Length: 313
Ligand code: NAD
Image 1 (cartoon, rainbow, N blue to C red):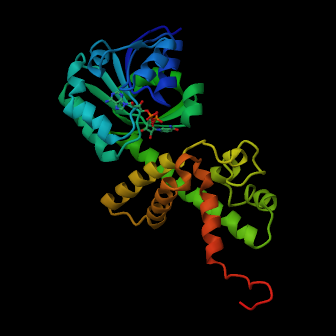
Image 2: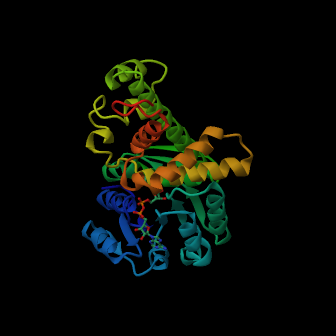
Image 3: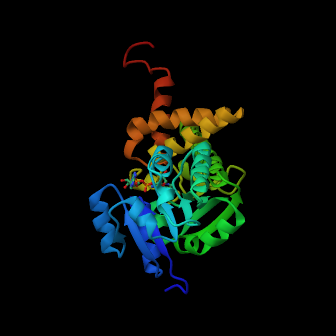
């Protein structure tokens, strides 16, 4: 139970928002929830969330409004077209935890300010497991005062919250981090496939690279081949984990930002292309580390065909 219980409007009770809202209830806050999917409202109600008839209804009664929506267009539809901020009491803090484009995040801040509201962009990393366990990392953009006001709530839903700067800075940190992650997973996967073709065992490469300069999260925690890291998704046929379509989405945002900013992010742009293709194909329901299989398959098609038995190549 918290000392200062707040009333929170929580919009978007999906894979991430559902458990985040439940953790706020568990910590003693009153949570008014809304989602377009009635079944999700029922599930949230079972965890103590009070179902609201609409987003505006949830916002009208709230001290803080949290949104956890699929993409920027959903956030801007609520903030701008549907005028959600205007439904709240003046000075209400709006925290958007969705992963969206930096420009969209800034537009959401502007819409909130125009309605007399305070706002923060606060995307997360840590996935559904982190949302359930309350161990997310928040990357926040907005004013010092807004961050200070949000911190006690972020501490309920996560283990770490970093104030990254002004409006949009949280989203900027998120897409930069995930650009590193996507590129590094491809690098690790290519190295394993190259090692295989050179007769190197997965374990030998892991033992060297995980204690040498090739060490990174994609190798030592989310290792893309089965064996060396028992908890990695590769050991459960690449069930997520961090789903490939979400990686493709984040790399798409990073690529768009790089193009708009005029940054020569060659690997980031290429990683976005590779993940887009993988996520639309075999990776649609896989962990993002499953891209190693796509790289292995493409490599096979590059190798010269061996001579058919009794014939010449
Ligand atoms: P999700 O699709 O499971 O949940 C989003 C929910 O928002 C849905 O239930 C949808 O019905 C609801 N919604 C959409 N428009 C709405 C509206 N106008 N009013 C009310 N509800 C509305 O998505 P998720 O996996 O929970 O992800 C949410 C955000 O978190 C995304 O931006 C995603 O990129 C980001 N994220 C996800 C993960 C992950 O592992 N799932 C990890 C980090 C960040």
